[in-house]
Image (tube, one colour):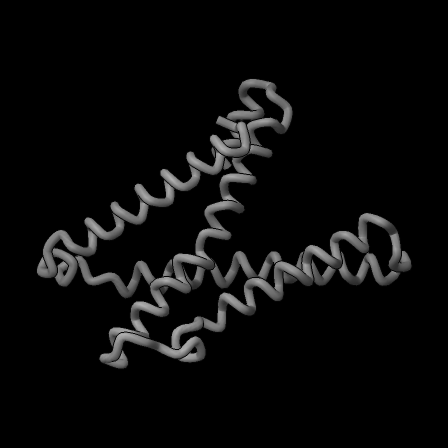
Length: 155
């Protein structure tokens, strides 16, 4: 949203928006290795041993995320090269619109549930550890994003 506003205010076309999209997608893809590392750490901690099985440590939503990304990429490619009939293309676009609506709805519901479940008194009682962890995650994500932008020549 900020990149789109910047583009419209400064008439830069879609340059800033394109760069912001790349950064956002890079951060989204960073979820996969971070979640895997944390999953293995938690599985080792829970088992009390120095090893953990892949099955117990692997969060299944990562697999679903990768599968959904592959399916979307393939369908978008086929739509771009006009392999599908007009009726099927229309049905696919309608399905994508429905999925986009549902994803926004469920993200809003999840964020609301997280916010409503946050106990401020408990947060204060636990001290600064949760806040420090959130800050460290924010700094790590910002550093990785800036590093990737530098590697891509965007910054």
